Length: 84
Image (cartoon, rainbow, N blue to C red; front, side, top):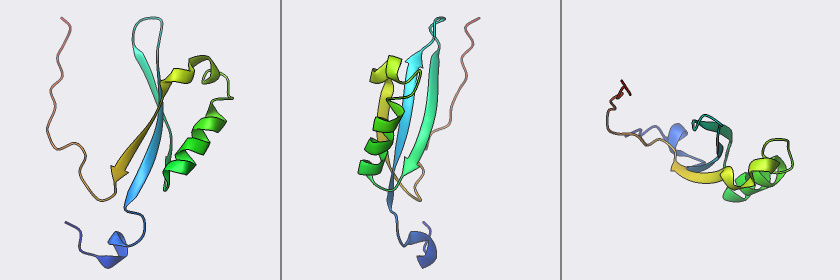
């Protein structure tokens, strides 16, 4: 745990705005649109993005995730499984 007061002061939570949609070959196209200090800021960014080409045709692909700063959010390892 980080005990440096300079690193623990201020923002404790951030909000990530993502957009994901299916490509014709059934793969997903995911974009991190931005990271915001307040949910309202992420919602405002989502409203702006909804007016842009591509996003307006895939309006249902937006997601806002809340993340605690200074914390591991993926604690397990991973394995790649080949389709072959």
